[in-house]
Length: 142
Image (cartoon, rainbow, N blue to C red):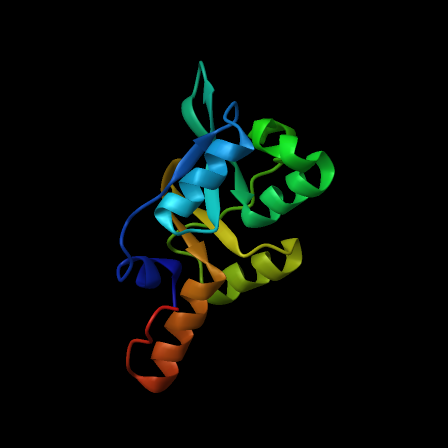
């Protein structure tokens, strides 16, 4: 099974946050969209709008643990590692994506095809697809 097989059954929605936004804004975006991860984007003059990382609920918890109530004012850029974005393509296998997630201890991967952000795939998406493949019927999202 390929990532693209899962994406065809998914609503094509990617919620992003900019590096210069605050943890408070990021948390509100996650809550408003009922999601647990955002793609972090940065505006690079020569390359335009570029995905540079992921911001997750774990990052919110880390910010609160380190900064207390002031965490809402901390910039996303202070918490996101942008050394190397771990991503996949729609032609990658689910086995490869699971390996990446396990190796990097992450649950969400941006899907980038031809240098363009097309979606985000989560461990939950993979589990639901595998359940459907085994049972033959779509599983209800939790």
